[in-house]
Length: 114
Image 1: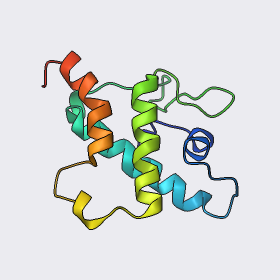
Image 2: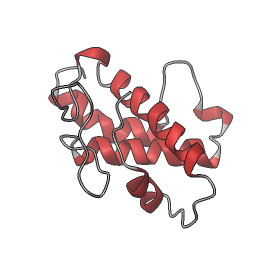
Image 3: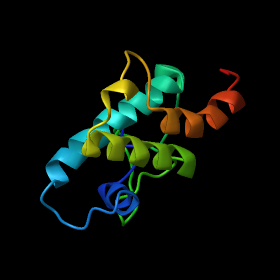
C-alpha cells in the first residue's frame, strides 16, 4: 500500500510525542492514504516514487518521495482525526472530514475533478 506521509511527519503534525501508539498510527497512515487517493480519483492518481521492483521510495527521514506537501498534510490531518476519534457527525460513507476535503479541493480543482 502507498504511504502519503511518514510516521514522523504525522506525529509532528498531531503533536504526538511518545511511541506508544506508533503501530496504530502506522495503520491509520495506510487507511488515510487510501482515503486521500480515493478522494483524488482512485487508481488514476499517481503519487509517490517507486523503484524498479514497484516498492515505494522514501528519503532518509522516512518521508515518501514524490508526494506533494498538500497530500502529505491532508493525510497527516486525517490521521489526526482518526487518532483523536472523529465526531459521528463527521462520518458519512464515502466522505472525508470537512477540513481534509477543504485542503484537497485545491488538488481536485487542478485535476479537473471539481
